[in-house]
Length: 269
Length: 313
Image 1 (cartoon, rainbow over the protein chains, first blue to last red):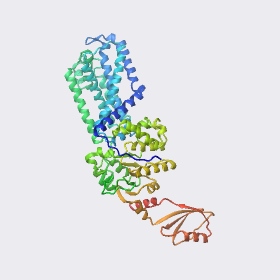
Image 2: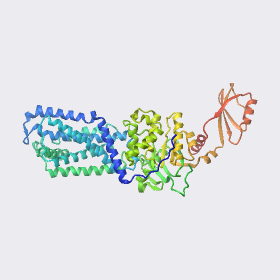
Image 3: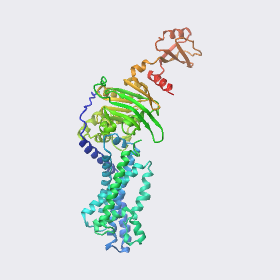
Image 4: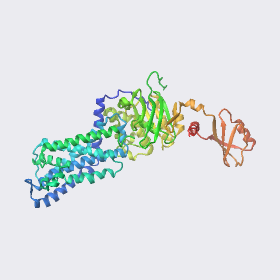
């Protein structure tokens, strides 16, 4: 048997630890969803393609213009954003809950990795999947309509912030989840209605005043409209107002996520 | 390797007044004190639900303590848990790696969580996977491994950052005797090379063979904490199982030993450990009983363990 002589090598510096640990979590997350791309990347592209066919091609021409744009062009940003939201959310909720369920989250918990880094790693995984799927859906959209970017800065910042926000939401869902049902209830009964009623397929200005006011409580409305502004230059919501809402939600959910991690909720007995 | 004198370096693990009350109200630890010297091979024994895994959970950060103090090589976990964690390797009781990753990925990822750069991680992964006979299976998805391989993978994973303190929570549970013996040899070498090891196990033979010091925990309290040698010296009697060549219906009475019939070819002899067996054989021979073979009923530590736990009931 080989002589076992643990080297007692220098423990890595905090900087080395943080950089390596963060890279490890992100790489692991990327590998996870890329390895199962048939389940994670392809389905949203097909689903969103069907939206373009049905709502854009078949129903769209009967609706006519919306806010001065062909219906297909009008819904394209919303559909891309819908893909980004659902994929960011589902990536983190399924990955983190899976790690809890199989208990390999303990690999990270027993290591000297700060909670903020654990959170950042999982959020990066969710954002990566959200953006990859978003790009793919955009490519699909280009088969049906012309898309131009009105403002790259707005488009990119809304995509990243929205993806971060829903990755955080997925993370919180996973923290509280105790069984697989718990990670499908929120997407089904909360996320999907919020997205469909968030101005993806229509302008809230076309709603009766009461329902327009109700829609203002839907955070997805702000993201869809800010993104639509980035692509088409039109929005039902003021840009500053939209960014304020998104950033406030990101800050709130980040604070809550870190608080849950620090208290060990659902993770440490 | 000799245990490092406590005056030379801080203990590998120092626990004082540690309590844990779960949210259900269950008091798992009632204020335990424990010290494991640097370089020791230490057994932490106790019946199911005694508090072993809770103690290990607190030391490894998976369980939050209610009160008390824990230091790893002198580092207070309340002050700098991250530094303390860098020194610990944990082999948990239950399989807890991703079932969808390869053997090598699991080990390399764990190295990454401890800040080990990729090149060093690859070198160490090869060393420990070879050492634990898993190198040929490094590209295998972990769920395809046998139970024994999974246990060995958890040991390789726990060692990849070369911890000074290795905690093994029933590492050989469900492992066949051949693999168990090879794991014993591996752990003994690892300890000889300087790694402090804390072992919990239900195989008391394992603890007796490997460990120099021992603590028995029961109902959240330490009921015995001494060296293995001192503990075994407390054993007053030994039990043997005798196999008779012929059928027997009754056994002769003896002053030096207590005999109990198990079946018509087998009986148990309990004898004071200071007595010899000659008189027993003479009396059996006189009674016309021919002994074909004999063996220890159980290992010595097992008897002591049961004695201490039963007395604590």
